[in-house]
Length: 279
Ligand SMILES: O=C(O)c1cc(=O)[nH]c(=O)n1[C@@H]1O[C@H](COP(=O)(O)O)[C@@H](O)[C@H]1O
Image (cartoon, rainbow, N blue to C red; front, side):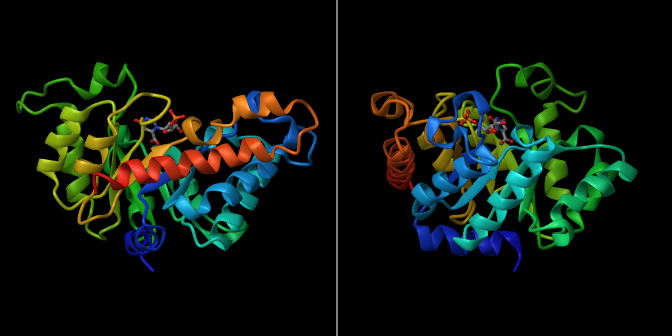
């Protein structure tokens, strides 16, 4: 099934557009999983147990897995999320010359274990750098449009000779690259005006909207402009997975971690309910 059809089904089943970011910072893992074999996998397993009812998608960021144990943890995590019937978007922000991109795109193939259903890509190198991803028609390809970080304006807001901004040009290209209907755009919740104007440019492309929660983005704008025909994702990572840090402190060392993971579940549920007010 094509990614955006699968995502639409999941959004309906879970009644949620929440993307739960799985960014397991090793310095912030609770005691309950620190001594486990593959702590990041044990952490993600318990986060998934606590949050899957409320998750439209899981979004592991590759930065948190780029070592041998990390790749194992990631593979287990993808398989486990699929076992709960939740799609996985690998946030890898890939983008390189065609020859290299062809290798990166193999991350979307099942050959070496279960693969992610979608990926984020960086459009800076242009068309051929994204082609290997785009041609995997069943997979979702989220192109960075207007990012949530403060420095995003340094390049993305530059005005071109044509009068459009660089991010508007990227949005236009993403629309052209969407011949398989598998392209999404990443637009940060910290830029509500850009969210609105980009939605006007591309009414039919679903957005991944990161930046609510820890980055303080605008949840209402994220929903109002992020969804295309009801399909899109609003991501929170630290705001969900580390919501239980205070609870863990109260539980003390040796605690089984239940309070920590319960808090993650509550946080995902609260975000779902908050976003649903605007759907
Ligand atoms: O592509 C992304 O997901 C992304 C794009 C962007 O503009 N801003 C952004 O924060 N992200 C990612 O979304 C997640 C946000 O994490 P929190 O700030 O903890 O919710 C991280 O994995 C970021 O790398």
